[in-house]
Amino acid sequence: MEGRATQRILRGPLAWEAARFGIPLALGMLLQNLFNLVDAYLVAHLPVGEASAAIGAVGFCDQIAAIGTIISYGISTGTSALISRHQGAGDQDSIRRDSWQSILVVGTLSVIFGIAGIVFAGPIVRTVVGAKGPVAIVATRYLRVMLAGGFTIFFLLHLTTLQRALGSSKTPVLLLALGNLLNLLIAVAMIFGNGDYPPAFGWARWYATLLYIPPMGMLGAAWGTILARFLVLGPIVYLLIRRFPMVRPPATDRGPDRERLRTLLAIALPSSAQFVIRIIGMLAI
Image 1 (cartoon, rainbow, N blue to C red):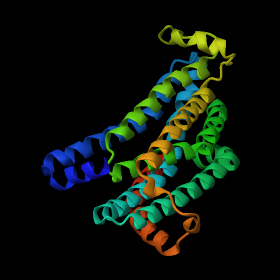
Image 2 (tube, rainbow, N blue to C red):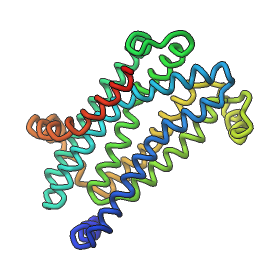
Image 3 (tube, rainbow, N blue to C red):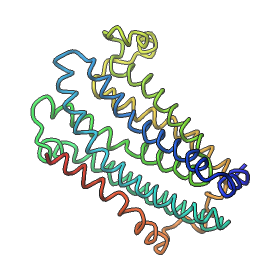
Image 4 (cartoon, rainbow, N blue to C red):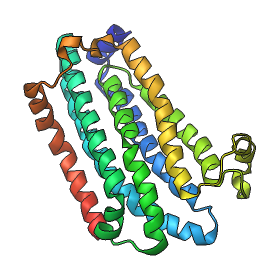
């Protein structure tokens, strides 16, 4: 399968091959952003008093959470550049080593941002952003969950990027689409629970009641997003290992490799720095 994909890339019409890989990439980024858009859309249907605070909180919490996602995706982009080159050269040993080193980096970022969310969500919301009152309360709870569960989007984007770099362009998009569908189904039930539903979302009441899910409001949107991403990670890991066994490192090569990490970070960090600066500017304003 990988051989046919490689031959198509090397011998197929350039415009068609660029579109065949570029369009799924664009769709993948769109689907990633839909997680946040779905949350914003759903919390807007909360009762008026609760919705106003929730909408204000979602606006800047998603921007803060996006900082970690952008840094992690910079690692994914840099890794993609490296292993695509190794794939073209037929160097499976370097694919395996660079893939694993990038996974170590993404895992480290997950721990850093997760701890930051658990410990510092309150000070970030109240002191750095300056939120007050009900907005600060719901934003702190929402941001804590989103940052603590940030590993789900970090690895979701990273592992699908690895698959694209190795020649699989459609499967990652389908899995991201599945994640968005699960997000909608789960988040609606967790936001409104076994309580009152807006007419547009009444279809979720039966399984929320069956599962004894209480109304969680804005916090339910955060947990729904994290759970949906986590459920999709399983198939992504399975397909990556099954279709591309070269990404699995031997036991002797599972520690950090300073030289490979240095090369990876030199490519990855500049690609994400400009977007991080933009978001920080937006938060400052």
